[in-house]
Length: 365
Image 1: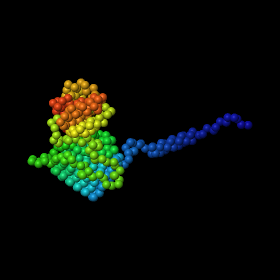
Image 2: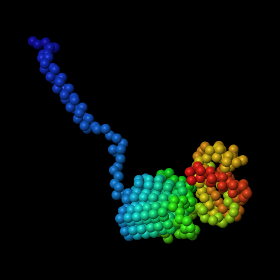
Image 3: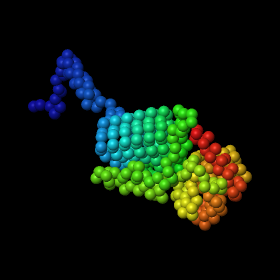
Image 4: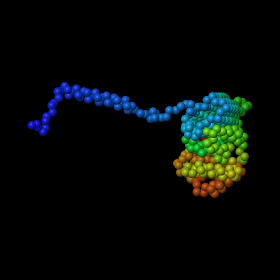
């Protein structure tokens, strides 16, 4: 008769050690396998691979090519060795270089950094960028938006006009590229290699029609972009820049940061240009209290608390009666908005000079 609890036979000591060794070996093997299966993962391993061919147009002739909104998405782009081509980049990018292109029509959406044209000739372009530079170019005609002073070097026959273009995605692309629609020094060209007695650059005619220089795309793929070249719809306000002013009377208007700053500035531009006044220049820049004292003088204390909310947007209008026109329009349309407006024709000239001299220093111009 057996017992309810039988004692198990105790294994030999040597056998127990062997089992423990075998178990340890199996565990080590499993750990090694796990290590092989679960290799460290890094964020850069997860990025989509970039194919340079997707960001290059090279060696093309008599073609219409382009990239739709969302297809470049802030990458670098290269255009080289193209002839008789229409090229459209309907997206924002990091930088763009254009080398050895002849007789091409080119649209370049907002560029966060620089655009550099080298050894190009007889090209017509529409460009928005932070920095613009050419070297060894001949006969380029450019509708330009540039946040800093454009530079030409060893280039001749250059003509410039103010950027004017619209499609629905363009405003957001400017934001993605870190560009303000109000910072445009398109006509303030610096010639690195001037020639005595000659002028290597000039301005396009005031009545120049954008489509006469860079036609709308003809390919079915690119026709889906809803483009307008009407100056009144342009994302960038069309300014006179350094063209001769029509009057000795200008007026400075400054909007302070808020939810509707851009919309208010654009509304005033529409109102004033609709009355026949000319928009000379615009600027978006941050100000400090000491800057306000220098620019707004006795009115500074009224505006200093508003500067903490963000950058200001300044507009210069020109034309006989510009000061009165600005004052009456702001009273009628922006009665609940705090706005700086020149008080008189006599003070307006100093207002304009004080603000834009400050802004140029602030932006390193």
